[in-house]
Image (cartoon, rainbow, N blue to C red):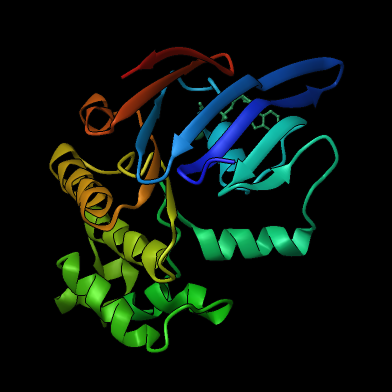
Length: 232
Ligand code: ADP
Ligand code: MG
């Protein structure tokens, strides 16, 4: 048992079947991610990045392999945790950010950030904490705006604040700058670096953006569902 490890994966494999064809979206991937580490996954489109981080983030099941989160077996020889426990792990340990922001258009910025608290809430005063997060992201003047009134970079800041509202230990970000221009990507990159450095947040990033990947502690390259290159 190693308390410094956030995520331990052994031989994770995900097979999709299309008719008689088998697609190894993730193929025997083993890796450990330390607490407080910032890891970037890169690789061509279709190389399995989304499938892999969705499994690491407990959003998807592997076909086979073992996965432990904070020393707790999530998937193993036999299924280790119930759906109910899996939901708890997702809500309590993880924050998620996606390329497409997924903001609710009819809710204002503050309400969007507070949305996860409808299901699970770690803070005694979630509104105050949500406002504090938005302020730290430079969004204090936009709290009452609707998503449709925001730029792409601002929408992603809202999504970041929402992912942090329950103080996750691990942040999963799948192409968070995929819809942003390079100046806005740079800003999001700074936000991620600061969260990692100041808050010790473990970050798992998928990106096509080499500049963004370079800010991580470790870059892992995927090709055809396999890890091809580990760089320090
Ligand atoms: P990436 O994020 O690197 O672009 P993905 O993880 O989305 O790659 O996809 C990896 C491979 O798995 C691709 O060949 C893709 O077509 C396939 N794939 C992904 N999701 C599904 C699915 N739900 N059903 C069938 N094949 C899928
Ligand atoms: Mg993807």
